[in-house]
Length: 438
Image (cartoon, rainbow, N blue to C red):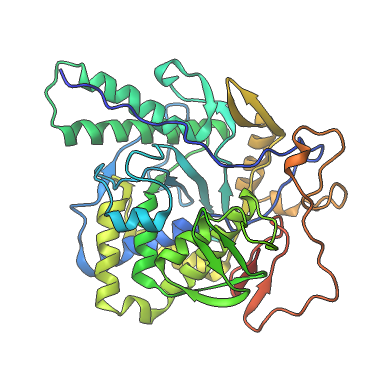
């Protein structure tokens, strides 16, 4: 009998503790959901230029709690999953140089958590595409209760179900190769993650999924580097390897990993940074990266194209019915009408069973998603009262870990041409310029 590999399902998030907020926030953000445009763009290169579909990992999924799924619903709901694993889609370790650039340990670190979860809702008339970002630590019901776990962080549905399937196949009577065992276990992980998200959002229909590894992000950055970014302050960090000047600058792939992973400043007089600033960095970088990928000159370079093909084959997984060329047409239509991105709110933070989780109001979440789907969400007036960005109410739990962000003052220098300055992590980031962030 083979020993069942043990999978890490709850890697530390590194998120600072924050107080509970009396006001629930509905911040419109361009989050790591831009991964969708990135991955789908890479897929388009593969399908359109090389027809290299055989090596792309694919798997099926079902939604037993969704009443009806039309063969061609017109609208499209695509779940984007960014994985925390430090291996490729076949479970193979990455090159040593990549681990050095990631500053995130080796192949045995991380886990099979879906650390990025976003549902891309594209209406039938393509009038307003909405990316719905789901905080990875939301405490929710896990579909199928894998390993007996009925509730946990939403990101852990994948790893829990993968481990359960791995155990079942390892000790079962059917003889499977290591690769067959691994891929069937990962397919079970995807099934549980997709079903969990669908149920959490109100048993919504999900048509397709796109999954990408951390290593894939690095290799895409490597293929298209340099990428332009902008910082409001000079900063350095001995943990992530970050060492940046203020202003607009072009960075390579290794610097890109430091840029998107930095969540503290270890310098003498650098800015105060948190995990929320790291998320903002990732958003800003993805905007610049997507802009670079959309330029014709980028995809006319044969070396770049072949690099992206390799990334897709090794670091991307799609569902069996995903037609990338067909979706490319949809993506073009979407680009003409624009898109908005919403982060679902949380009630606060709690320690449950030794894990720091986000508490959520499921009824409110499902009401928000329903209003996004029927188009009424953006008709509602934004609330003008409540706390300022970064403000913590008195008496809240964990108040020592949160510091109010700097206010924007009239004395600040205007943003450089082609850039837009964002001082608060709650401000919307819009495409069309280089975001200058903390």
